[in-house]
Amino acid sequence: MMNTTTYDAIVVGLNVVDILFELPEKVTEGEKHEVSRLLIQGGAPAGNAACGLASMGWKTGFVGKLGRNTLSTVSRTELRRYGVSESLLQETPEAQPAVAVVAIDQQGERTVYYSLTGYKKLTPQEIPAEAVKNCRLVLVDGYETEGALETLRIAHEHGIPSVLDIETGDAELMRKAMTLGTDTILPLAGALELAGCESMEETLRKLSRWTPGRVIITDGVNGSWALIENDLFHQPAFKVEAVDTTGCGDAYHAGYASALLDALPLKLRMEFAAFFASRVALQFGGRTQLPNAASLKTEDLSGLSAELKNYIRNKE
Image (cartoon, rainbow, N blue to C red):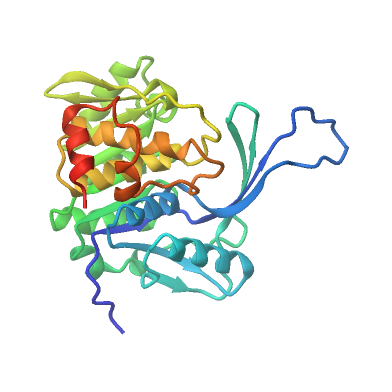
């Protein structure tokens, strides 16, 4: 039966269940340790971005495979909790999400250990072409390579904006994805490796020549950069007392995509993305404090531009 739902955003990418715990101040190898905080929730760049978009009120569908097992149940429940549609999920009995064990230190920085055992990747034929053709935006990551490329190809053919969350991978495939996408967001380390350059600006200018769209480079607390009319633009990160940085990059992508859906100019998209991400760092877990339009109105907006303050105050 064909799915006739029209989506604001369709997300294609890795689906993960996170097991997060806070490291004790002192760890002795080979011994048992009680931890003060432990949390199980959905994760991954695409999964978190889908939840962030849905949290902001956009009708969001996530494309992926889930089976009949505990991890799949957790994943479905988490997506549903944030309002992500389950209609594009495909049931494959033996499939399960990837698993990430996230150790968070006393400064809020995290170390991730993950397993892809049992994870089933999407083929191009499994991308819901009609749903993609009729949506307003797609967001893909660099892990579901074949599915992402097919999604981008359809979006490109139909003039649909696309946000690429690329961290690492095959350079040729990443370059191909960039030629199809409209907005590519890369972390600095991955961008430097991909471009083979030594400086951020040189890297940004080189990668920008690979795509007719926009390239944004992010670097955590150091902010993000893009070219606007060939001039370098820097968006600082918003300084907060971080509890946990898990999912902050994913939240940046969700905030950026949400602002793109609202047709904000590039500077405001980057500013909103940075602010959106900063809210996530205030709680333990990448999805624990995903903002929504109502909650953002209650935040301290004093550090924002006048344009972004006005946008947030009037956002439905």
